[in-house]
Image (cartoon, rainbow, N blue to C red; front, top):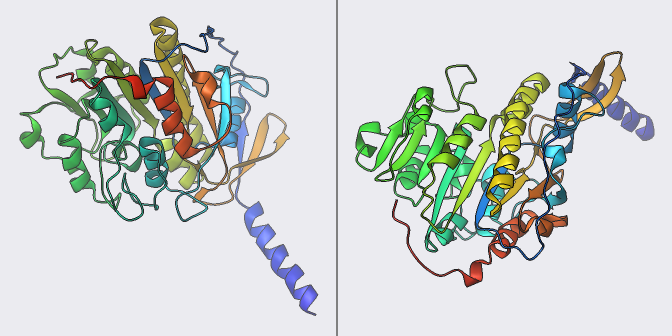
Length: 375
């Protein structure tokens, strides 16, 4: 009797999961191949671009590929030549949130979920932005979430709760971040920060030129940026930052995040996830072209974690059937894609903390002189 009871429980569980399916039309767009160059293995990078697809696991990429161009299509992320895999667990949990994952890249240390650039004992950890600032680097961040959200915040904030948005906003204003673009207007006193920052609130502002007499912050929505023609995309904000950087500095560090891919995963909305991923992949296209032209920039593309337990089950005529396993994060390993000088370091299996140290190795951080670059 006990054996029969167990079988009944398993059967009910299976039926519940089978209801969470969506049908996605297979795309037909032709692959746009992009130039990929060879960089000498001994060449050191000067600049770093870290592109984050929040919530992107292997199947988010696979489904986007199929929906955009079909089974044999190649996305721009697919064309990045060096590929590795990252484990994502936090200090004391098999799954990570964005705060602990971003702290791992930012500082090289594991911490507890919800903590931002603090160790598990709440001691302050130096972030890569703070480290590079002492070497004369300029820095920027882009997010389609609020600029106070967990992933961007781990670059400048030190706090034991990622949800203290107004505190985090104050830390951003007082940080060494030179330019920050995203949402989060409701967390800032815009009149108070006008003395230290150019404040952008309209998409049209990205067409203007600004000098480097003040830092720059773009707040294009109250919280996350609602996708519309009136709001900037990740691609547009990223290109603005690259054009605005002070070329007189030792180098630059840029983090750009497709934040709302994750939000669609939490909502189990495959169509919305694909729309967000399209913006992310077009951003990657422009970043690859930037690396080709600049020759001194290392591009790393990765994710903090997978969201939603996405599975691609089968093809049904001109559609694929997908299933979500959860509305939460999972511990599925994520990809690491790299291009430019030092990209060969990002192959094989690594921990998310390793990404921090591989970046430092790629720019030969230990041999960089201390200096300043006043914006």
